[in-house]
Image (tube, rainbow, N blue to C red; front, top):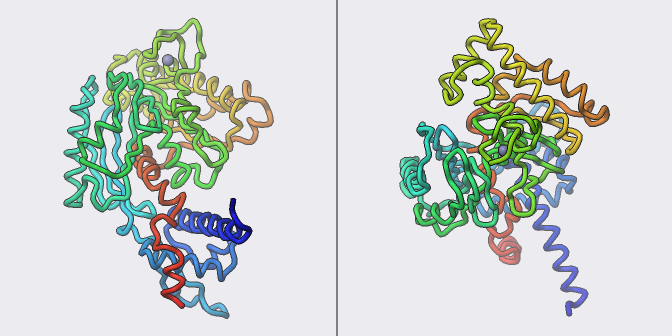
Length: 410
Ligand SMILES: [Zn+2]
């Protein structure tokens, strides 16, 4: 049983933690804000902001600078910014065509980054993990394997269980039931947290925090590659489903009379809009990969009828699938990534026509479609965001005990 005083104390401690989290999140997303802007964005009082910033400064997570006077009356509000070097995460990505590693500091600053091409064939998990560990070791730090790192975030082109980074299936890698989280932990020799998620989910997260959907709370990210990845943000939070397997929009059945899908079903959305479908429609080798896609885009830009027809057909099916998703999810923004972002300027009208025909009027009028702005790196940046999440959710765990600060400043 708790006494009245304890519960009041616990409540104020809960409020303090939530406020620290709100401030650090704002600074992490924006990089640098004045105290006045923090007051406006968080709704906290000036004195509360001052005290909480003091705690974050004491932990070296943020710094304050005197602002230049703006010629307006009154004292200028000090500028608060994150200290990227003081909280660093390792971000890793396993994509269809490449592997990537980056060190990212608080505030989203990329301190170092490497990407290497990967042949498009099945590779054993052990081989890829060894390549990733090698890549991470080549980054700026001389101790990239855990020490001094806040955590590790991993984006993988597969269906992932969030709790332990278990990849149940990754058709593009030829993987089934790979305990990727455990493999990476062993490979990196890391005792710290390793969070693994699907790359489209993380692309969505990055585009919401730093890209085309910045500031939006309800977002659908759809990325076209060999497969079609989807990431769904609902009310500011990723929609992962019961175990993290959710959001696989590429396998929505859109054409029961269509082609077989790599997942075992028939007529999935990606069999109509994925890279293979586009190349097939254009009469190019289905397994041609990036080289053929680039050639096709060049032809379309030069006005080739057959290239444009193939793209419009993909655009039509894209609109058909998006209309259903708009009706189910009512997103504010749809971000088109990968191949879809590249063909969007050419097929925008086709997509909008199909959406106009099939989406219900109210959610259809609300939604805005935008090509991704973070490009190839969106999932890698999202992996960094995933690794920052524990710190952003509860910065108090990284601060000196509350009472000690109060004593020190008394
Ligand atoms: Zn499928």
